[in-house]
Image (cartoon, rainbow, N blue to C red; front, top):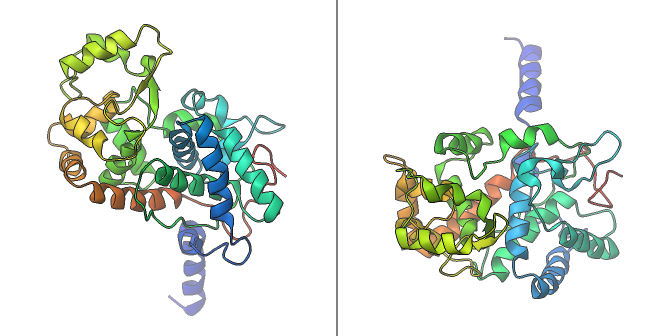
Length: 319
């Protein structure tokens, strides 16, 4: 191979694999918007006073955004000419928190106009939410530098987002498809230590006996009584529903995982996820550390950086 061929190959590999992960940095806004975290935190503290579930909503929003087209804020886009919003796809129809993202964006535009991307706001809001809900006092360092996409992928949502009715191999594959491993899958599922789910997402378990997702009989009767309507909301963590802790994993050990996709992690015979659940149940600090690492890893899914995309002035529409 001559030198020209080598250079050509190198450029080709860079074009395929890129170096976007390396371009994200915890110090990205240190000079251009040094108060980005404190501004966002102020908005979230106020939002939390009127909606105790806002943290869970924002983490879910970030998760659903990153799994489709990467972490580019595409989920935030409304319908417009040439844009079929991802919000309308079935897995996203119960996603919420958009108004608070708008509030954070407005507050940041007032102090740092045209600087902070909507996709970075999702990553930051998730980290702050975990902290406000009782997570680690020294949470992970958010990596910044993402830019916002100018397209949406409504048609790709169903096949990308892990759903409550998916079987275990399907859920695992959806994580694998975006470069996340078993530890990431278990750690990120631990976000279900806060938030709620509608009865329609799990009441199919009432009359079935899935050996990979058994349901504690006492818990089953409690859920039956709660679910008078498919739209009823039930705490994902029945023990400490509003606190970000490791009780989600002890619930799984006791067959009290609300969604079958939760219980799968502990009850699927031979799965490597069982040992990970036990580790997180035994040591909360291990869960917190792994959760932060997995959130950083998830936030690195195909970000737009450099001159790609744009910094939207309104998260709901392209500039």
